[in-house]
Every structure is written in C-alpha cells, then in structure tokens.
Length: 443
Image (cartoon, rainbow, N blue to C red; front, side, top):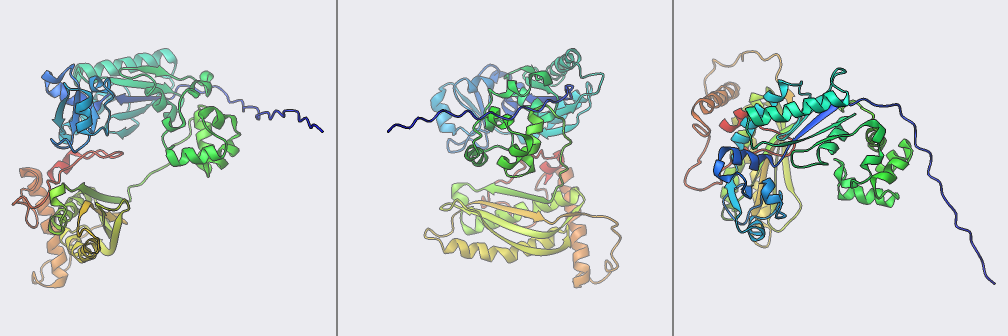
C-alpha cells in the first residue's frame, strides 16, 4: 500500500502597504578613523599599511587599521603579531586618544557649517536629520558631497568618509556601510525592504550571535524572512516590542529615538602581565576611582553606589562587589569606600590555585544623580578633624585638585603613590559608545 501526500504550500501573509517615506537622515561614518588621523599627522605614513595599537607590543591587538592595511585582511581586533605576519611592510603606531578627540571636535564643527548635527553616535559616526528643503535625492546627495569635501579641505585630506542617506537613522547607518571607503549610498522608500535582503542579520545593530540563534529557532534566518512576517509576529520572534519596532524601521518608518540617561560613571583597565599582583591592582583601582570621581564632579553628579569589579586570568566571568555611599562627589569618601571593598577582592584572588592574578580591574560609580540646589556647608568652620567638617574640607580639596590638574596637566597632584613603576599607566581612552571630553585627559 502506497500513500501519496501532496506538497502543501504555505503562503506568507501579504506585506503591509506603507506610504512613501521621505529621506530624513544623513549618516556619516569616517573610514579607518584612528589610522587616518595618524596618516594626517604623520605624512610619511600616507599610502602605507598602518595599524594603531594601545602599546608597542606584539601581544596586544589593533584598535584601528588603515584602508591600505585592510586590503591584507587586517582589521580592528587583529593581534599585532598576526597583522605583521599578514603584511611585512606594516607600520604600527601607538594610539593618541587626545588627538582623535581633537579631530572629532573639528569634524563635528565642520559638519555644523553645512547641516545641524542631531546625534554624535560615536567618535567616528554622526547622524543629521534633514529638513523638508534638504530631503529630495538631489539636494541630499549634494549636501553629502559638500560635507565630505569640507572635512577633507578644512580638517584633513586623509579623512575620508562614507555617507548613507535614508528615511530613518537605522537605514542611513546601514547605507553608510554599503560602500567603503569614501562611499555615498541612498536608500529610498520605494526600494525597501528589498534592497536590504543582500545584507546579513548581524549587519543590523543589536543583532548578535545570541539574537541570531533566537531568530533562527523562530524560522528567521535572514532579513527577507524577518520582513515577511507581520509586525506583531516579528516582535514575538524577537522576544519583545523591539522586533515590532525593527520591522517598521526596515520598512522605512522614521520612529522617534528612545530616550537614554547616564546612570553610571566608571573606568576599567587591563593590567599588563607584570602588574597583576595584589598591590599593583590596588593602586590601579585607586587611580581609576580618582578618575571616576573627577569626572563625576565635572559632569555635576554625585553617586550613591561604588562597584569594584575585575576579571582573573583563569576565569571568563566577572568578579564584583559593591558598597552603598552617602550621596557624594568627594574623592576621599570614595577612596575610603574602595579600601573597604578591596580585602574581599584580595581574598577571592588568594583562594585561586595560582594565587592573586587579576587581568582586568574596574571601578564604577552608580546610582548617580545631578547635584542641584547645593549650598555652603554649616560645618565648614569647625575644627578640621571634626567628622562633620572633614567631608566639607575633602570635597573642597577634591575640587582644588581638579583645578590644578586641569592647569598643569594630568597627575600634577593626586592621592597616593604613582611613581616607582608600581602601577600601570592609566590614561583616558575612547570606548565604544562614549567619547571622552577633552577635560578627561587632565584627570
């Protein structure tokens, strides 16, 4: 007996018809930014394969690769030793974060000459919302070309950029990645979402390996399958309302941005192999706490929670401990609280088979709030050793240290030892998603 089953065809629900969406966003992405700045500052590096590294060591990784270096398969995150193997003529230059911030400020100022800057997305990315008299294709393309030319003429001829123009910010970002280096791509609503189908899911910000696996379980393996769902079904596959939101963005709808608020201020540092013992870690943690406290005061905040965290050499997970603070911006109060947490980190390190070997240490000030309505203390004139007067004097001294370091340079005055080679050099660096202010280079 033979059974024959006819093949069933499951039709996808019809795509929703959306009205045409005007071009609303221009997204500019500077190409190989750190390496391009170094080529601008060092003419002998122009046209040569260059990588920027945190320190002059083969054990570290590239934090930027020039356009010429990328042709050899070198990219951000490539180990220096491997980059040298891929390109024998490679030039390695140390990072100069202050200069990158200075060039960033000059670039943003140049863009403002042509169009208001709506969002500074990162050190090398800027988004600008287009007005009604700027958002037809010809005007938008001409504007993008003027901005690109202005940066090269007035900031640096080595600073090339790729620009994306689209109905919303997400699509403009995706468009800027479609042609590099020195590209200009326009995504119009009539082309959406079909023109995105050649991209990978991971090309969309917010989709990483875990989300990609989750979507695959739900039967979504590419952008075409995501867009073929109804908005509500896409949201369910995503696991929340963001999937619904993403569906509309990929179809060209310009949704308002979700508000964000700074809730923590902190710094972390990867310790060099020779400085991973107990005492160098303690001194580095104190230095990080002082930097965080100085930044807290400069931004006009105070904190109610101190977090000490780290990662040991033999463990991929993070160790952390915290302590409540009185609402404070005083470096001395913060250092005292840190001293109370450190024995717990020391005990955790000594309990490990190889002893105390910490690879990364970080200090974070959380539960921050603006300092408002501050008034002079009633206890300022008490004896300096009086507990009520001590915090008032400590905050005044902390602010005085800020002023001295701003005028005479970082570490002109600090708390505790810095010399003797006992701690790693802790400087201000550019992190993903946050651009340091120039004032931080004095901390």
